Amino acid sequence: MTRRPEPPATAFQRLAVRLAEIAPGAPPIDLTVGGPRHPMPGFVVEALTAAADGFGHYPPIDGTPAFREAVHGWLDRRFDLGGFLRETGAVLPLNGSREGLFYAAIGARDFLAKPGRPTVLFANPFYATYAAAARTLGAEPMPIAVAAGAVMPDWSAIPADILDRAVGAYIASPSNPEGRVASRRDWSDALAAAKRHDFFLFADECYSEIYRERAGPPAGALEAARDIGSGGLDRLVVFNSLSKRSNLPGLRCGFLAGGSAFVTELTRLRNQAAPQVPTPVQAAAVAVLADEAHVAENRRLYDEKFAIAQALLGDLFGELTPPGGFFLWLDVGRWGDEVALVERLWRDTGVKTVPGSYLALTGPGGNNPGVGHIRLALVADPAVTVTALTRLRDCLVNTPEGEMRGGAHGGA
Image (tube, rainbow, N blue to C red):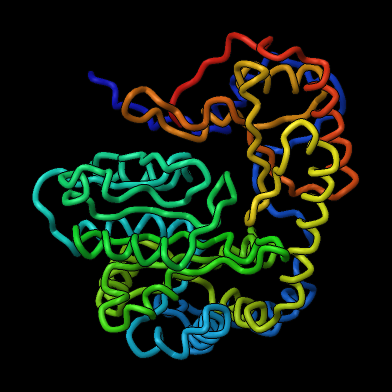
């Protein structure tokens, strides 16, 4: 009997295997998973409790009126939409943005009904769900290289046949892991490419509220769609959630926003294949979206930890604070192989990081843009962050450049 191929291992599964036989050289500090650890808003439990009777009923698939109004209101305030989305689009609650990102690709394939094998594009490095959606569709996953410092690919440099077969292109801003942000012009150019080649732009804005205060809030894809006006939402779906914004990864609540026609079709698909968001969870989301004080405090805590990182590592890496997100994406190539360096960090210091090559795919020409990088999630408290980054610094200072050898690279 022919064995069915197994799904590719995630970066974290690969890392677990790689480090399984290595004992940490100090009390472990795990900086791999980007799971928020700041306190959640205190009023969330109250909101859940007040709406607890809702657990006894099936929720509406398209969300409660209060939830939809809260999302529209927040999007209007955050992106100065002036009611644009209310008039021309729709929103849909999600059990966290991940399932929406996944189902949207299926919905896009069916909505567009393109002949032949479709492609699914995503900036490289990338979030693993993008590639998982492509595999599920039987689509050709297309990791797209972006220029240094950029978020978007050069759309004109991508072969037209690849774009013509595309059903969706995933673009995250702020990006994971680099923390780069797209400008309104970037989003406009992406929407123009989507219209020209008839694919959906999937704007993953889950880190949209995690930005440096000195940099200010990043532009959103809905702003570019509003600038276009009529038809601006036709090939756009925006995703967001409360996980990073409000430190509620366990609540599993997010939403998508887009043109009414596509959201209607996607709602029908989710009604058959995906669970509804419980109404008490939606009630908690309503309360959270109405409050910005906890979000500002959240940013302040991340800004504090990036300041720590700059003070401890700046003489080794220069300016390393990204405009958005909560990851350090460090270019460690001058020390040699980043996988071997990750092993040494764990063995010598107990600090666990992710090799950059595990977060990316090897693209055309054999290039993996994650090679020579490591990712650190600055989610621990400041004292732990100081300890971890001091250990990292000491390890690098005591490691001659070019010494690391023997890592195993490869796509995520």
